Length: 165
Image (tube, rainbow, N blue to C red; front, side, top):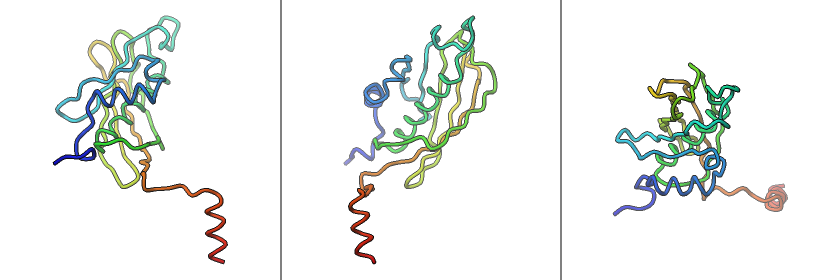
C-alpha cells in the first residue's frame, strides 16, 4: 500500500506545480529534466540573449544562475520529501568557480542531503557550456512548513495571555 508521502513526486507533477506556482521560472525558460537513477533533481535553462550579463552575450547573468539553483534546490526538497509542502529559502550561498558561458544550456543538479523536522539542507552544482563545465557550487537551507503548524492570529495570542495572567 502506498500513499502520497511514500512515493516520490513524478517529474510531470513537479513540472506542473513549478509552472503554476513559479511563473518566474517559466518566463525564463527553466525546464525540469527527467529524474536520473541517482535521485538528484536536474533543471536546465537554454541560453537566450536576455539572460546574458555582458553586451556580447557570452555569459549567464549571476542572478539567473541563482534563480535556477534556488528552483532546482526547492524541487530537490520536494523530491526528497516525496510530497509537497510550502517551503521557503532560508539561506543560499553560491560560490562562482568559472564563468557560466552561454554556448550551451545552464544545468542545475541538486540534491537534498539532510532533513530535520523543519529544515532541509540542499547542495547544487551549476554546469555550463557544451562540455557541462562546473561553473558554481551552491549550498542552501529551506524551511519546511507543516499543515499541523498553525500561526495564531492576534486575538488568540491576546486571549491566551489574558488567561495565563
